[in-house]
Amino acid sequence: MIKKWSFILVYFSNRVFNQNDELSYSFPSLEQKDYTNLNVPFTGKFFIGFKEAIAFKESQGKYHKINSLGYMGKYQFGSETLKTIGINDSLSFLNSPKLQEKAFVTLLSKNKWELKDEIEKFSGKIIGGVKVTESGILAAAHLGGVGSVKRFLNSNGSRKCKDEYGTSVKTYMRDFGGYETTGIIAENDPIVK
Figure 1 (tube, one colour):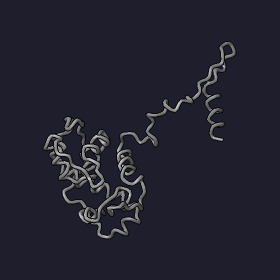
Figure 2: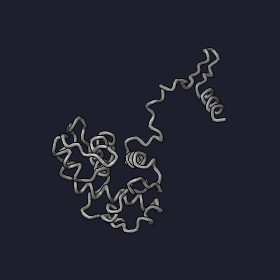
Figure 3: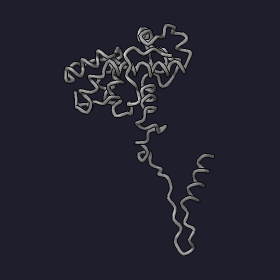
Figure 4: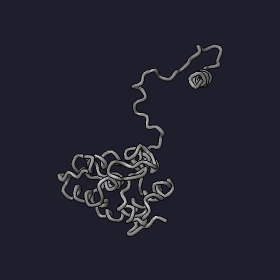
């Protein structure tokens, strides 16, 4: 049914109604290669795109997911990390999408504070073959922690910092670079409210 409606909409929107001219139509491509660069759901490089890209990488966006190492939720938090932002009840956290979203932003705020010097010093530079951006630094800190990001940057990319599954800080810095994260306010000791 969707294909029919798409055809009808394309037909009428592209039809030339001038009697003296030849009718012209433009149809969507049937070639899959013409659609490889689509970024569905079109969140782009905005903050929502950043959040959803990290969530997909971490848990396929599933709020109730717990991985083999015990990391939980949409953004795969460890219980110790949750405690640093004021969440002591892992079960309540796991069952509350709203709390998980707040926790993610709160942790970004905390990491931005702890990495403010590195963000200022390294943003725009190429380290280990990766252009460093604020969003890349924050994503890498979410993966491997603040210390791993500092080691990677201060060693000019020679320190290979990875998580337990083998994903590197460098990979996160590259894959999540260039997103809009300036709206995240750096806070020294933020607590989820």
